[in-house]
Image 1 (cartoon, rainbow, N blue to C red):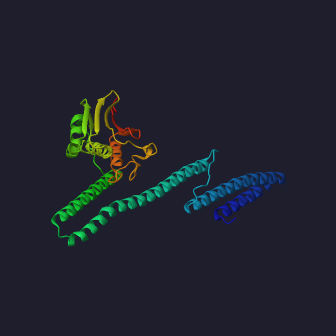
Image 2 (tube, rainbow, N blue to C red; image 1 turned 120 degrees about the horizontal axis):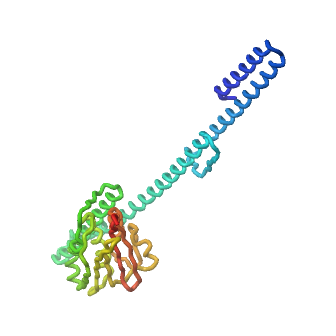
Image 3 (cartoon, rainbow, N blue to C red; image 1 turned 30 degrees about the horizontal axis):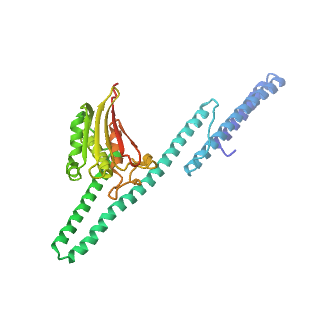
Length: 330
């Protein structure tokens, strides 16, 4: 009875019933009684359903209040007909979406915190190394030792540069601000471009590169695709012993174009395979210099180009990375 509109409804119903009965009393007392009873019945039904509707609205309001306070584990389902029931079901759907968004936001926050921790750790190691070397270098008089220290600093700076550049690229991909071209790319030209940064390392370590790349043309972004392949090749080279073998195969089918990069290195442990494309993940056989973001970047780049990457490996028998660019028009 605290609802003002509900009070007005009761007063109006009572007034209409009394006035109708008074008018009918001029006809006959019996007619007045029948008229009053009919009006009372209609008014009672109206008041009952109105009270029920207000009660349901109050429950709905209480539900929304609890949701706003963070209680998402509430059930609200109503399969009956009516506008209020439809509103209830739509609100339930909306609350489910809000709950999922809230959970995703929490996951993103935790992931961001973990990423910052990993980035901080990766940057702190070369920085600490350079600070120590700088202190030693300031007192070192031997020219050969100074040259050696300077070389170590240059290597650490190069590592930091690569790390920061890769993280920026990943951030662009995550934010959706990385522009991807969609132009014809030659598979052989892409493989040549991806191998170029490693030619010196391959020569020094006497690594044999076996190529069986049938040329094909696919659509994508040449620079980003080369970036993806370079990180795969880099990973393979980190696991190959000197005088090892790096195989690159390119083939085309009716459904997809395929580039396979295979090595005969130490392979990937079975328990590490499901996590190999996760950021900052270090497998059992990862090299000491591995940061753990190269393959994550490759996967992100390829997914943006409607392609995918998979890996098969057996510990002690090398690894095989398969990149497929799907022909969407087929």
